[in-house]
Image (cartoon, rainbow, N blue to C red):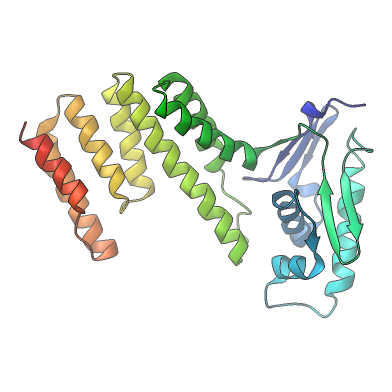
Amino acid sequence: MADAALLRVYICGRLAIEHADGVMRETEFPARQGRRLWAYLVLSRRRPVSRDELVDALWGTDIPDTWDATINALVSRLRRLLRNTPFTDEIGIRGEVGRYILYLPPGTFIDYERARSAIHATETSLRQADYDAALSEARVALEIASRGFLIGEEGPWIIGERQVLRDIQIRSLESTVEAELGRGNPALAELEARELIKLDPVYESGYRLLMRSLYAGGKATQLPAIMQRCRQALAEYASMEPSQETQRLFTELTSR
């Protein structure tokens, strides 16, 4: 029996299945709809997925007349692909009446799930002031989440998963700044805070973290410019003013 720890499934960025005997790359998956089907089954692997749900995931409202036969063909092709791994008895797509479920060997690595567990571990470590552990896990979460998801494809569920990954990116950068400040590295914290603002120009936490980093690094003279940048971004993109929390932090830091 193959070692389950050697099976790695990637759905962030380019699709891939990696095992001891090699790698199945995105080009080996059955066309565009097959890639969507595989990603959806991986995300839903802990529960059965109905055919109606798959129809919506694959086509949305633009359902072809041949949808039933197409799903059958796509599932068959994915099953053949999975038989090329060393885990033939432990991996597959099980069909039941009107639904499917993906089963994988115990201990299979899935990058999307690793990103979610990493950001949870990051924030737990931060609360415990274990800054080295927080940084390590934050880097894992950020690297995976930054790859994107089903690039070039659209659909409500795809957009939803991209938002999950974007949220992980933001939380990873926030945690990295906090950890670097906790370790006494304001220059590194400043760099990460600037990346956070670049990722989301209207996310006020990024400006607050940047102001804290600049202050900790002896650059308090730059705070008015950052506050002005925050005001301009919020006004331009969201027709808003900085929150009381942001204004309060600015006042507190500039009055010391």
